[in-house]
Image 1 (cartoon, rainbow, N blue to C red):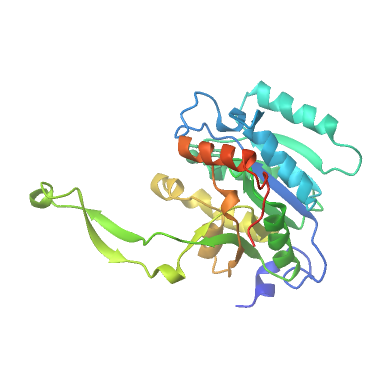
Image 2 (tube, rainbow, N blue to C red):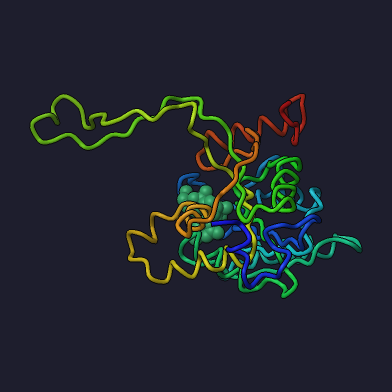
Length: 273
Ligand code: CTP
Ligand code: MG
């Protein structure tokens, strides 16, 4: 199927755009940060003296690609809401429209809440993890350029450095030897680690998320990114170069690495060649 067939409902030009679409960024920041173990929502955890959310917001605004930024926050978190209000006040004329919504129980729920709050004129959306707070501007640009060139879905990726194997739990009799046994080795040259911002034609992403309504609990829990929902529709998902600085701050080690990036001689948003 051609790309244009999927753009029905989003305007005749969708799928073959020559100019940048009207872009909104959905910033999901409603997670609780269990694995970081900081005792507060991850968006509030300090990084280089500022909350992770602020780094993420500044990165999006610096990239200059969005007409609107819609932030999903943990429901009832007044400290993070205040932070967004203060940031809004800081933005001089010409900055994007800033909207805040309550996130949901899962990341996909948070994305859906934010999608509902987008302006009518929005044509394309970038879904971005606040946890990838140090994403360089160049990654946003590569994703938007790909959408402008006609992609309905595009993700930033980096090569995988480790060999990746699939395993299964060992049977009772082998449990003495080891807890798991290898059942396959994926060809590493074809593997990519997937990052955000993930870019989509808005109508395509809305359609993909509507399918989730029919998922059972296990299927819903297995949604780890938006692109996999779009893949289920049979829409081609394109891949552009991501960046190792876009690491998802997940564990205490990641926070140490992010602090190192900020303090290092190359600067916070240093970009690999
Ligand atoms: N997220 C969200 N709403 C949720 C869960 C996650 O908006 N219900 C966001 C997080 O804030 C984060 C991104 O999705 O920016 C990726 O999630 P993850 O790194 O897993 O963050 P947390 O869910 O906060 O961390 P953990 O899984 O360790 O609790
Ligand atoms: Mg999580």
